[in-house]
Image (cartoon, rainbow, N blue to C red; front, side, top):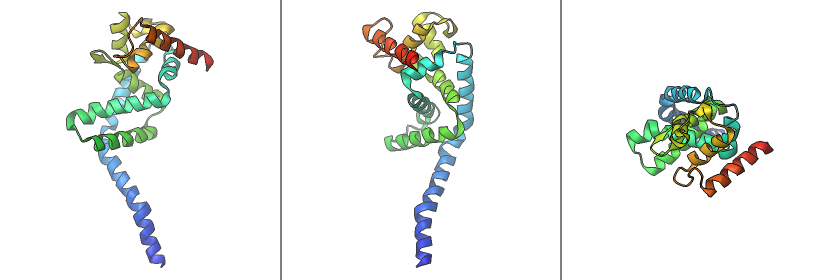
Amino acid sequence: MIRSVKITLFIIVVLPFLFLLGWYSISFLPYLNDLRSVSSEGSKIIKSASKSLYPIAVAGETDVGIRSYAIKAAYTEFVFKKEHSRHLKWALNNLLWYYSSFFHFNDKDIFNIWSYFAPFEGGQGLDKSSLHYFNKPLTDLNDREYATLIAIVRSPSRYKPGSSKTEKRVDDILLKVKGS
């Protein structure tokens, strides 16, 4: 009886844990240095930006949204573009990467990765987005322009500078920042 309980516990607890550990070792760890490198590059992008950029980004995207987008973009760049895996594998690996990111990166590191990958029409990165939409470096933007940039990078095809939909979103973001 005790032996069958031990075997059952081994099958239910230990084998899944070993499977997850192996999957983590094969699917995430080989890209950890690449992720750290991107975080470092993202840090350079936002280094001289105003300290208000982060709270504005969180108000527009939430911490969870920033982490989710950053990790999904990194996975797509480092793995998916090379492998073109099936949808289920892509979804499961994104989930693994998302949860693994909590062990290796704090919110600031994730924001750096997000800043590096933040999309805009025809390119990537908040610095390039700033030049594209405002013809100014990221360091020269004011809070309203940061909020506009955050609104746009969420969905470049949906939000356009100066549109009423974008202006409403910008106002909502700035209200959230003032309320927190």
